[in-house]
Image (cartoon, rainbow, N blue to C red):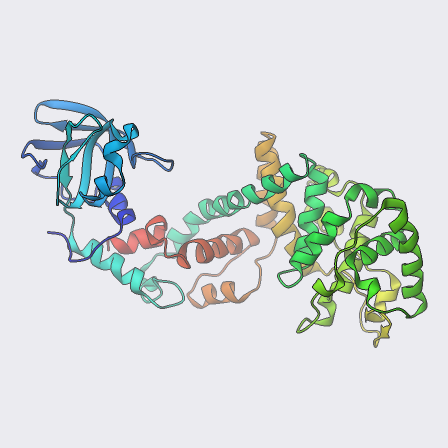
Length: 429
């Protein structure tokens, strides 16, 4: 007998896929003997839930698809009786048998009222109702850490593949120009969450093809970027550097018929001065200045130290004593992209691009290189990784910290416990 819960279909899918249902003495709704030979493969596209299944009903063996519902009447509710895509369903599996179902020609489809151990539903309901940092936090101590370590590889590939769609979408918008697309994503990430949007708008308003013409002149790159950022329009007067930028941009603006973005889009409030958009824009100019066709060069680099060197650049001298225009500050450290920031750029921008490019170009070596870089980089330090550490899971590399971020953000937050090795283990414990 099933537990008194109205369990979601995804739970019933899990029960069916893993054959956790009671399989002895099965009978269809018409009383015929039923044997499940093969429960089929999960269908992630439109149509019946499982395909290539095989069952024996009476003395006849049937091969085809399986459809699963919480209630049998959901068949009519979803309109399957009018959809020929469901005519090849050989068995309808339900938790509540409240009606019979048929194909488009009116012929009945055998239905099985599935039963499973009550503890499975109770354990799953416990996870769904949990209000802790992760659903299984109060049971996490039961899990062998080795189980999680074994799942890191799948989680990391999952994380990289989740970024594939975004990169390919931007690539299509840029007519398959990898350098342009990489530059836009890099710019967006330099803005972090607070200034990600204006940085992306700035990159789109100022194509890399224009910047490439001035890559040997860092001041002209700064004039182009600061001018198109709209930040040179905030004040009419300023120091010598500010005035020179405006004059240079005035010429370049007319030459390339540029369209700057609005300066008010940039946010300074509650940011550490070293993360001010002015400093970050100067650093982006330094990165472009330091390497022509940056993405093409990255494809050639197989050494992490060399790769880090492409991003550990120093903003121009003006920013040694400024965080913003026309306001000098006590000189402390040069405004360079530090080691930690460079590592984060590689983790969040370079590695996903290497992986996607390798996937798109069928170059397994590039995909493996991306994963190797993650193994070599130290684990990230953030609140999520610290919480995992508090639960006894210590990330030893960026590969593992990225896997833990994927687990928390894409499984724990959305309570996809059925798709998680830990959740699946606790479900049956």
